[in-house]
Image 1 (tube, rainbow, N blue to C red):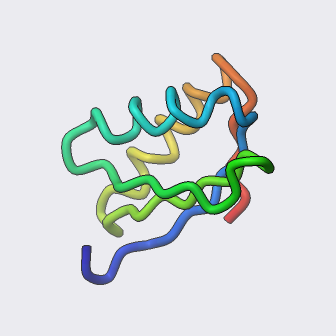
Image 2 (image 1 turned 90 degrees about the vertical axis):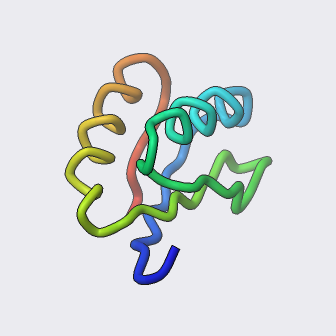
Length: 71
C-alpha cells in the first residue's frame, strides 16, 4: 500500500484477533500487523483518504473494548 499512514493502536492481547478482523473486514480500510502481541500493539496501514473513516471505526471499537489510537 504505497503512501500509507501507519497508525499505532493499543488493545488487550485477547482482543487482537477481533480488532484485526473488524478492521480488515471493511473493504479498503487498512491492513493490520501486530507490532507487539504481548503488549497489544497493532500497526494499521491506512490509505490517507481512509483516515477519517478509520478514526470513526476506532471510536466505535473503543466503546466495545479497550482500543486506543496512539499515533
